[in-house]
Image 1 (cartoon, one colour):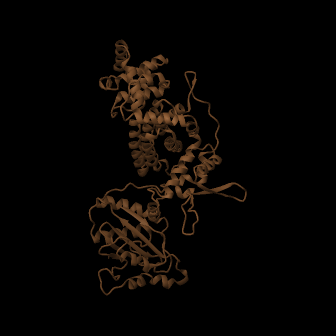
Image 2 (image 1 turned 30 degrees about the vertical axis):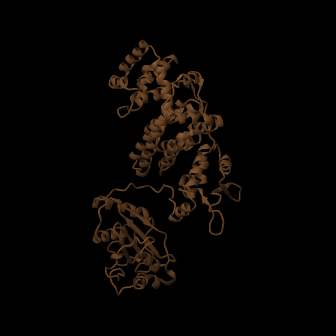
Image 3 (image 1 turned 135 degrees about the vertical axis):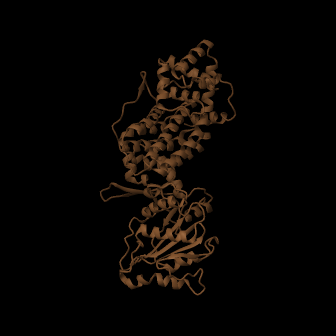
Length: 556
């Protein structure tokens, strides 16, 4: 059950005319009162002698009595809607619900003889509208501050008591949804997304790519977005607003959106905090070799589950923000065939990136710098790097889902779950080509080497060994263990670490999961071009991804 409290209005008769009318698409059926402040209000829907003017006059009585003391916007309008799968509530049940909402919001406290006048109108089976005039019997305004969260909290209690669907509730950190007018305007222009949504995606992606606020505005302009920067008298930046070329109002002027109206974390103060300079961290090294930006990003993402489990909430929120920035950046550099799923994952996780917890962004700056670096360096020829990163991202997103769930961030947890589904699909597509290469390498191992690696698996993973050995991906795992040994690692220690940090019981393919975890933790070299050339043609589904990766490299 959800409530929607609109902006206060000044035309009581106009609101009633809409509620008792046929609706924009003739969707209003049998409009009638289910309750009122005294139980005796005239009902133009069921009483032929009653009129809308009479009902409006009675509701506005105290407004007229208050005269100049009455607020200009005196009409309070709230809709209460049940979920589509809920049972049909009776008029008496809706009447009780209306009184509970009015009591919770302070518009009409229970037992208060001076409470505001109100009516509850039902013109559909699944919802009611409550209209009240905001002048009490003592001619003072009601104490209805913070009415939306109070109504939402009451709805949660009503859901439990009435056995209705318990709706996932937010914490008022969600981005503002496009209005109906914005949606209709976008459809007329032939777009599936509104300008607000398109700008939000563009700004988020730009934040993920920019190194400072100056570059942030430069990249926005390069993408074709109109940018207007506001300044304080001191010359410091106060804020910004953006618009799409061609998106104009009735006067032909651009329709501007400030950053904060796109999303709470896209205001200029929030962006400048994320892009604030930090002490440069030394480049990571492994076995004497400097790590590439892709390896540093993967390492940073790989640490996120442990950070979320061990660090305080401010640091955890900072790493979830960086996780979102990684997802925002990937569609810029991934092969074209993977971009739709990656873009959907980023869009879904956008809601999971914000909460009421204030992030300590400086704790995640090393990973943020690596993200900026991978946007600027050539896309890797080796598809294994993308598959390894996607595998790490999937684990991190699942960890973020658990982190939000334990803190009762319901909307964020659900958003992370949806993002994980899209990431899993992208990972499966990206892993085909590199797994084929590694699989062919494993098939070329001698029987003695394969037996030695099988014995190692049985020793390190006694409970899961037989499943891993029977899977089609076993040759790729054997090849990866051999590569790790050649690179100077202890394969048994790597296997122990891989199973200690992440559960494997629910994995579809234990061998495939271990391949990426071992290659990630050991920083094994890229798959060589020679191996790719020797590999037989892959499945048709993998060929477009390989061509797209090559095209991306040549363009860069």
